[in-house]
Image (cartoon, rainbow, N blue to C red; front, side, top):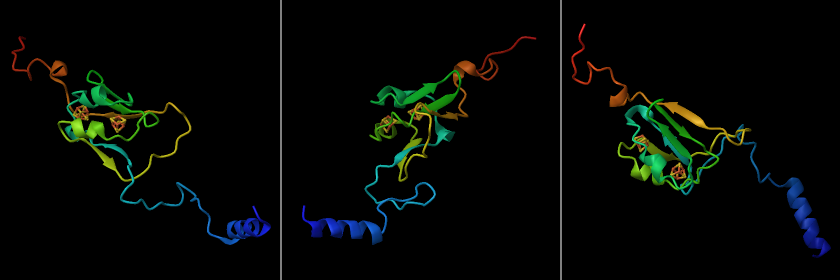
Length: 131
Ligand code: SF4
Ligand code: SF4
């Protein structure tokens, strides 16, 4: 490498704009090609577990008993498969990155308002409750 080429690189680094952003303090603009991350809209979720079954990375966990939907974003490979298979269209890719975290196993947990039939009181299931 010639001295001239080296000097050009040094000068560019010294006086040029930084290649990195102070993320997340500085908001980043995303291109249309950004894969983004999975967004969960739990209002319509029926806790069927199909997203968990189909996720190739094992990033999703659905618990009907606890009415919980969880995602481990460190495992997610942003393949979008879960949103394609969801029968209620509760999942979608949004054009933003994951919030930085420190714990490598951190999991986002959402509580679904859906009450599975097995957890509904007998009266709601059409049975008579005797006094
Ligand atoms: S997000 Fe969709 S696929 Fe996943 S449990 Fe809820 S309804 Fe089923
Ligand atoms: S986008 Fe792919 S890897 Fe991520 S949770 Fe959905 S199915 Fe799993």
